[in-house]
Structures are given as structure tokens and as C-alpha cells.
Amino acid sequence: MKMICAIIKPFKLDDVREAIADLGIQGVTVTEVKGFGRQKGHTELYRGAEYVVDFLPKVKLELAVDDAVVEQVIETIIEVARTGKIGDGKIFVFDLEKAIRIRTGETGSKAL
Image (cartoon, rainbow, N blue to C red; front, side, top):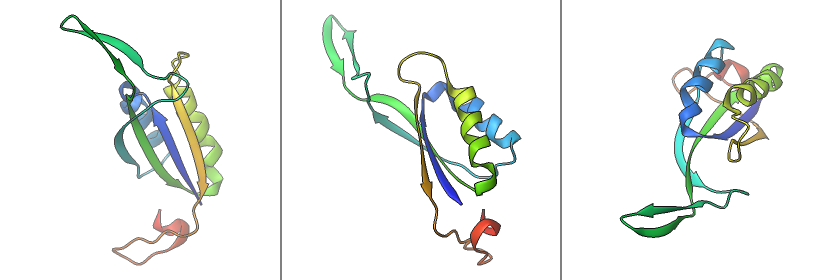
């Protein structure tokens, strides 16, 4: 099992959610986050004053998936979330040692 963590632009959330649901992924955790990478933020003008926005709004998706579908999920997220512009995001993949469904006590892939 793997834990996929994807940081994407907020306006791409609904498209990505629909695309991974079409793959049969039943669960995803979404968190609104702020951060920056190579983009380093940008400047904005507000009431005549210029200020720097260091942390840009992003959305973090966390998906626990079976090893058999990891590459397919990653490719789908990339395909749907890509705009071709700076700040499209990142995907991180972690080994998931154990998963337990609290309600039934199922473990491993059955708990996903």
C-alpha cells in the first residue's frame, strides 16, 4: 500500500476528485494549505499599497491506495491537475505500513 500526497492548485480540486473517483478510489482527504516552491510567491497591489504574498493557497490531497493502482492514480492526477504554468504542484508517494478500518477492524488493503 502507498500513501499519495498531492499538492495542487485549488481550482483543479473538483476535476481531480472526479478523475480519481472514476478510477475507483473511494477515499481522499483534502486539506487547504499554503506554501511556496520555486514560485516564491508574488506581489499584489491592495488599496494603493504593494505587498508580498509569500505563501500561496494550495490544496493537499491524501490518498491511501493499493500498490496495483499507484502509477495509474499518479498519472491521472498529473494529467488532470497540469496547467503547464508554474505552481502546478507536487506529488509525493510514501510506503504505507498499515491501514485499519476502525468500524470493522479490517486491515491492509481491505481497510482501504
